[in-house]
Length: 96
Image 1 (cartoon, helix red, strand yellow):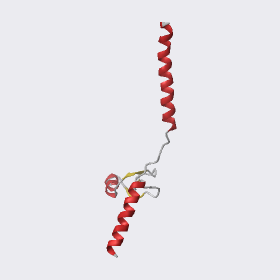
Image 2 (cartoon, rainbow, N blue to C red; image 1 turned 135 degrees about the vertical axis):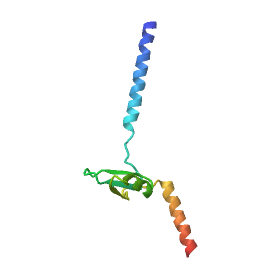
Image 3 (cartoon, helix red, strand yellow; image 1 turned 180 degrees about the vertical axis):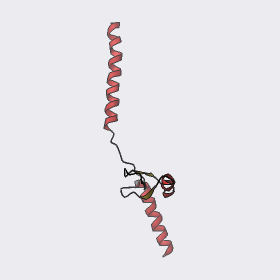
Image 4 (cartoon, rainbow, N blue to C red; image 1 turned 60 degrees about the vertical axis):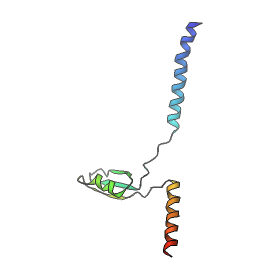
């Protein structure tokens, strides 16, 4: 019986590897979801939408050429969006 036990260990490892690989394949890739994009003047139309602030973006393009613009595909997290809406409503009531 011992020879079969030795074959079981590699089989279990193989099944585990298949499960892990399947889980990794099942996760979808998502685009960077940050509010600011750097567009580089490098001739390749390079773009990096990985900046949370305008200052971060400007620091990145400083000295290498390019400019920053708002990411038109940015979608803030639901919690952040609702807290901003509450703050805007509170600010509007306060100034009325």
